[in-house]
Image (cartoon, rainbow, N blue to C red; front, top):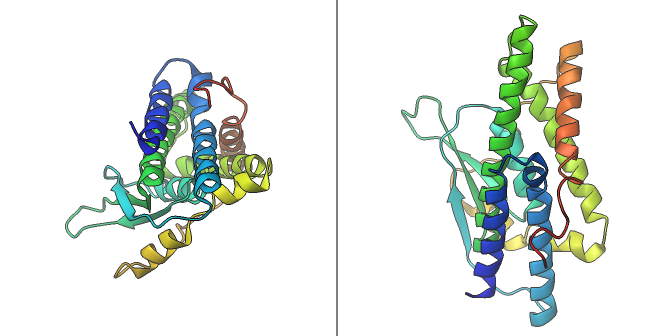
Length: 229
């Protein structure tokens, strides 16, 4: 097994832990994966002394319809050396897919982390829906969006704090110029921001705060040496 496959294998083992009933193991996955990616790029640079030319590839997600998916995909792609775009086909009934572009090992890790994040968020939706039902309230599109806004803010803060550990770590996680150039060269691609409506109600503030805490707790949960170095 070559070095690339070893990294992917470690990430896949890490992601598989997110399916366990142990919440701590699940919540440690994203940042541990990012740590492995940074270490891999730093080691490559030390050995080769330069950025080698590698092909940019794309990995495509399952179909989605919810707008909040765009927020999650953008946050993860930007912190895992990739770029994400939304792809919708004619007669798709409003569904779309997310495609992550990057070097092969980066893009594969990125879509695995994205799939994991969606799983965790939807699990929280089930809990929140039950809480709202007891209070005879609806947990709908707006409520989901508010939670995800908070989650992405917390996750972004988390990533920023991790990057502050060292300059080499932060630089290793910058999306390569070749990836940006490749995405810009794709025909018919327009950069757009997903609409984010930040509600001012008490419920919205509570949901955003809950999401922020959940995004932030990815940092400290679980064992730091789970997969070794």
